[in-house]
Image (cartoon, rainbow, N blue to C red; front, side, top):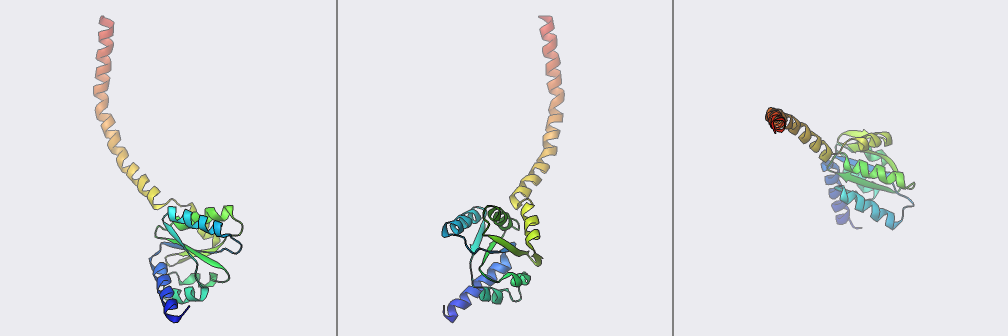
Length: 170
């Protein structure tokens, strides 16, 4: 890899570190190509990405970035999983680590906050952005549904009373 290629990789990694909601660093020694493809597919489905890069270039890219604290995790065979959604990459990484003993989560970063493996697990347990939006939409819509039900209830009660009177008269 020549100097221009290295500079391009550093610039790309710098953009990843700056724009991602969460970055998770893991060891992947011993994973097969099929396992890595499976991880990439799961991450892609969740809206995240997987990136393998030289640790030295990643450390250079981290210089001055909000998640600079993860530089200590970049030793050995590391893989970066990241997503704009602050929870997606952590969820997929945690689930993948449960199924694969050779995939070991070292830690990560959420903005300026460094995460140890327990922190990544806590972030993975949080609801995703889409789940939160659905929950909020449900909360907003519930009062309107209750009001509509309350407004329609008297008319429904009158109709059932009239029906009962009609049945008795017949």
